[in-house]
Length: 249
Image 1 (cartoon, rainbow, N blue to C red):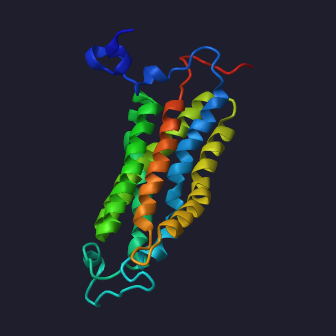
Image 2 (cartoon, helix red, strand yellow; image 1 turned 60 degrees about the vertical axis):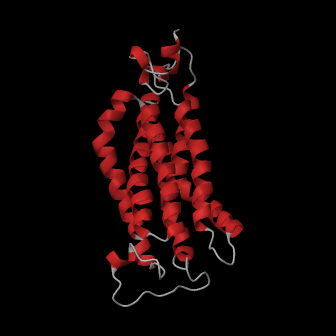
């Protein structure tokens, strides 16, 4: 194999993320795919657990109690203010952005995923989800709510969409005889992400908390690093079945 073929698509070679690199060899154990899918879904499933951040973020300036905004500061003003704390209702818009962009990105790029394969889609999902957390961490540090909306809500939401459909698509291909089980495993991982992520976030916030900080931006950075490791493990653990493959029996 040439160097170009080994490292990427230079000169027409096969890249590390290309679908051709993910086609399983004969004898591959299909039960190795669900753990890879769970690595992705358990990480992005933390979107359901973001409410654990709302109370600390609503006291990001006041630390022990919220610093109320002036009466004339509305939703638009709260996106840019640095002198008062955010309302929980304003933070809650992140949920809306999460799932609007989850559905939109899944619909828009579903066909692209089938062409390029789950590894490339999961890689992009990892960059969006973890990168979104880092942008949000910067938004918290500078007290700019719009950065949180763009970081986790928009960019992270796109990562959610790609990260949600890539495991489902792959599992269904490997388990055509057990489609319900395959879909159930994926949903279990997505729903279980908050069950693991929320206690982890709470533990990290308590660790990073100081008299001058509620510890949320540091928690976002730490979780981005942790999720990056697990999502990359899932990304490179993906395999797709060869053409016309069928399970035994």
